[in-house]
Amino acid sequence: MGRQMLFVTGLAVAALALWAGVSRTGQADASKSSQAAAYVHAVVFHVKKEAPAGEAAALISDAHELLRPIRSVRELRVGRPAEKGTPNLAKKDFEVGLLVLFDDFEGLQTYLEDPLHLKYVDKHLNHVDVQVYDFVNQKK
Image (tube, rainbow, N blue to C red; front, top):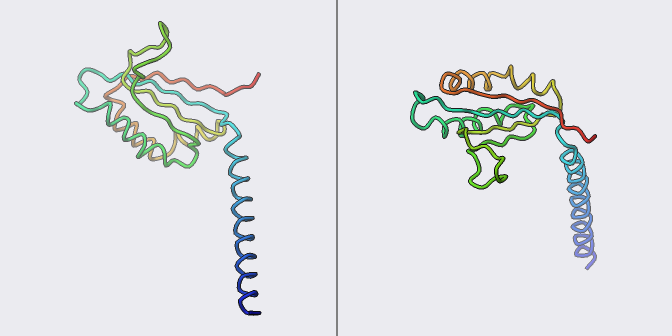
């Protein structure tokens, strides 16, 4: 009976320690993710008529494969124009939109100089015209 009680107590202590560790880790992750990424890099791609077939799809898949892994990228969103958008205002005259979030300007610089980004640019820049918008997320 004493061994059984010791075993159960040991399991309870281990479970409590595990729960406390997960709870602390979750709190740290939550506080980091609740801080909004301050630097926004938006790119609009217009695929040229002479581009290879499937260029828009390649821009999207390569963004996930090549750009997302770059260490300074906080978030990445990429895709075709939405079928439904802001009435009378949302433009659909582009093939792909890309939004990349960074903590700061240094994060953008790291991204721009990263070999994976340079590979993406080398692969696609001749097939597209781009518009780039960088701005800082501000509260007031």
